[in-house]
Length: 500
Image (cartoon, rainbow, N blue to C red; front, side):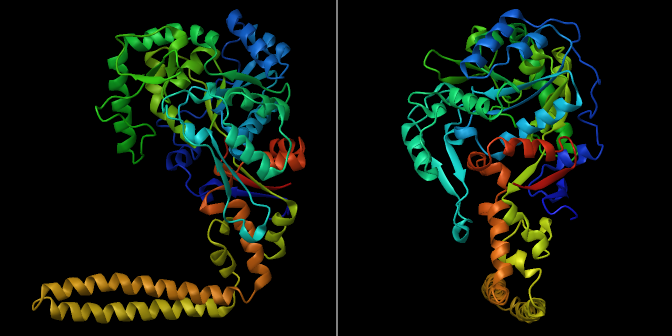
């Protein structure tokens, strides 16, 4: 803990980290290779001119001038790096910005490089896109995030990227942050447009924004869609076999088949924007009306853009492990897959609590009471020891009673078994209550622990997965992104805690 403004922790200490990803980072390449080619995979190969023109025009409409970047990429020869995310309200949670920072950090290492941000506009998960969690400015109540969300529309299958941002959600957001209405939340703007214009404001000209439903992208992917249709059954078998291999290795496949034992490969989008699953390839619609699934989205990306590096979160890395056989069957080149960086942020005042109160950063992913208990008086240890011993002795005596009662009355034995659960529960509650009382004797340390947990583990969830980054950007401006770019370490088995 030499740098009081930045802490580096092993990723295995990050709660909820995918076990497959941890093993993969440690060198297990049975299901997914770790290394790429080291040079542009599409060197000298020009990209579709229609797609390049559409990218320039779309980004211009977002206020993102990337014409020179697109033309350089379209001519072939640049190192291509890509990441993506659903177009969530107000930029989504912190990890969206960390993905963007991971792209920019890798660009530094692979010049000349072109970076893309794939905006997943075709998803129909409205609840995820139309909600946001804000950190409360009041530290006394910061454990409870301010959650804003819009009511779900009656049509449950519409692609969210094309839907207008609900007026009620915008009003909640502006009121919560006490800000004027920005252009990227103007009346009638769609989720895609709003998301893109915000990113263009934060990182103007630094990344090419790509709408997943861009017609020219879908047309460029037409040969892939036809190949998927032609090999539909074989792809289903390959996915089942690969999933079984992952399960035998002790992993849970990221995507499971439907109840009818089939994997979702493609959707069709009708004229009203509704997204319906294709159960077979018998009626493949026009390319502009085809929507990919979580399994085939990477295939479309890799087929059309030929990226050298794909930067994804833990779930996206696991997707690739599941679809390696599909890349081979469809002759789609595999990029190097890199894990996005993991960064948590907080004001400098809060981060300084680690050194000021000698609190270990890896200990904060718990309740404030447990964090502070690590430094509480010896009475805490003594209370736990007494409670544990008393509980063991009582349970042992009850077991003796149960053994005596079992031959005579099975009902009494069952009642005793049930009572043990109640006793253990109340022992735990009593112990925790006593510890909280002892911990609060050290008020200053407890308040520090409460703020640290509220900042990095609010509502017992990892900050970067749930908390919006926009409020920090309001305070820090572009320094926020620059700070994260400097600190982020993509494709490593570590994560950072960074002060702002």
